[in-house]
Amino acid sequence: MASAALNTNGVVLCDANLSRLPATVARPNYDRSALRPGIVHIGLGNFHRAHQAWYIHRLMQQGLAADWAIIGAGVRNQDQVMRDSLRSQDHLTTLIELSPDGTSAEVIGSTIDFMPIEAGNASLVRQMADPAIRIVSLTITEGGYFMSPTESGLDVAHPDIQYDIGHPEHPRTVFGAIVAALAARRASGSGPFTVLSCDNLRGNGDIARQAVLSLAEQLDASLADWIELTCSFPNSMVDCIVPATGPNEIALAQSFGIDDAAPVTHESYRQWVIEDDFCAGRPDLEKVGVIITPEVHAYEAMKIRILNAGHQVLANVGELMSVETVAECMAHPVISEFFNKVEHEEIAPYVSPVPDMTSTQYVGLVAQRFSNPEIRDTTRRVAFDGSSRHPEFLLPVIQDALESGGTIEGLALVEAFWARMCAGTRDDGTIIEENDPNWHRLMDAARESAKRSRAWLEQQQIYGDLADNPVFEPAFCRWLDMIWSDGCLATLQAYLDGT
Image 1 (cartoon, rainbow, N blue to C red):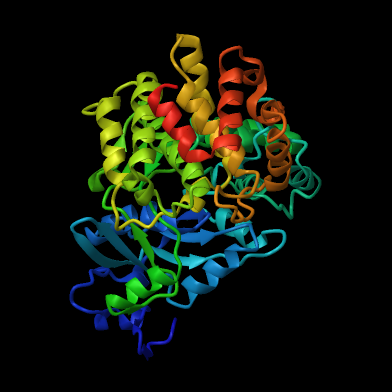
Image 2: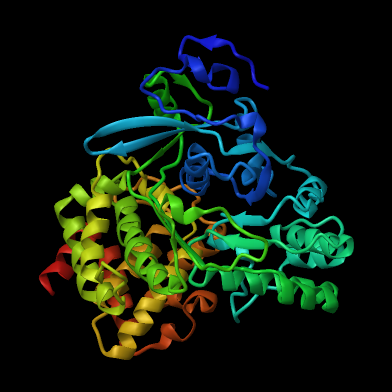
């Protein structure tokens, strides 16, 4: 248990100090010592703590879900920092809601442990093999699924996947650890668990299933058959804007009288939509506002195409124009006009409605959320890993628009801004630091595209047949040439003027 000492920056966050928190700060009303684990969550970062962990906490506040506590985990060395921070405060988290009307803070306690970060992931595999664990959930980012760049499914040739095939008892990847744990559960007769992806991928449950089964098939065909027959992989959609934590967020927690090493700020909006496909049971999530429905894909498509794609519409040009946050982009008259025009004319027409929400209404909701000045969500954070996000969020919309004969000028311009950003300098000449797992490859293509714009599209693993599309290719090249010659602002204005 963490120390109950006090700090000049506020009450040190830990179980022993919960009663000492200021009265304005909500806190767990349940006995955390009585909680029992039911979920292992891999990728226990800010988003998970502001979203899934909050929903479980809300159930616990109602006297429910005491046997669904969360154990955090990670398979990357950098996860050690989060583990150390959370262990120092008994795995409690301060959530700070940022609303245009003001801020509020609450402490949540649904996470009770964090597995060691170690080579071979033995502790993680052992914990997932425990029959008490009935859900293994994931927020490992879009790039963490080892999807093949040239065909659908798992990239079996990836060095990390090859390592797991050769060392199944000491896996390196998330999916290697999951397969090892399921193999142990089959051997012991303790049954399957649900793998619940909470990442921004279309059909995230289907992708997780394919990754687990593909790896299992490489190791033991009978194990793969058992997993396919007994395990479940529900699709889900998650939504909440959660900025990264830095000195400002730590100071904000201190302003509430809390000394928290890893507080989380978030907007006042949350949504979670899940298929009801849980092979080993689930918490009563509908009691805290989670939408349980077989129609996840419609919600997912709306969110990914309008919100996630909209983030990319803003982030790349914002970074190039030295506009630091998403809210500041929305306050910029030209960037915000660009955002609204692309969203309404080139994205929303290819998004189906969901109950109580049309695509046009959702664009308005997203614009309102992006404009919240209290959310300091940086364009750099939103632009991270474009090599995963553009193919997932934007290129499918471009394909649909081309097939329907719609305009793609604004979307081609978004892609051109991404290409220009990956050259590594802003319009003012300042340096853009590495911001993609494939940064050096992207930078080479981007710098070549300054001389020959088509060079960017020749990244086959990203653009495929789009590179030769007779409508998209010339539009992209025209915009990229204009960005290099005239700069971002003039190019934006040319698009908005129809010139």
